[in-house]
Image (cartoon, rainbow, N blue to C red; front, side, top):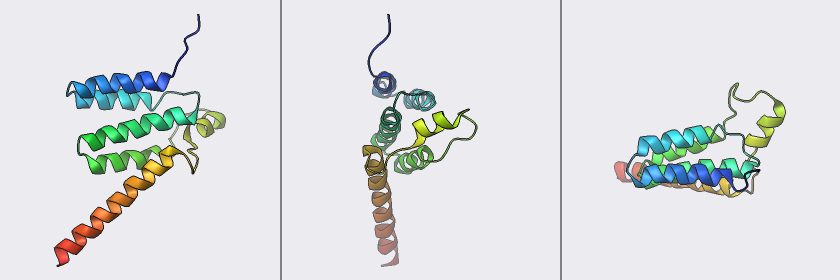
Length: 122
């Protein structure tokens, strides 16, 4: 019998379980492992990265969330053996929810830096 369902949702729920029980380091470990899985679609991998960053935002780790999103758009080293796998799991389309989320985080970070600079110079 073949398993059906969305594998990325299982990883997310598993990490959420740890987060809900204030085991944030364990939740991060689960997300790190999930980010290495070969999912069926790039959207599933994007969902992992977005949920991971959202967890960091809930923990008020804003810089960590931004670092995660930067890391998720960086090509991995020798993690993938073939070009086919690399393309499948790293090409986040420019109109995907992932890209909108990342752009929003970058914009918020720029605005924060602007206001901090303005406040400190005044």
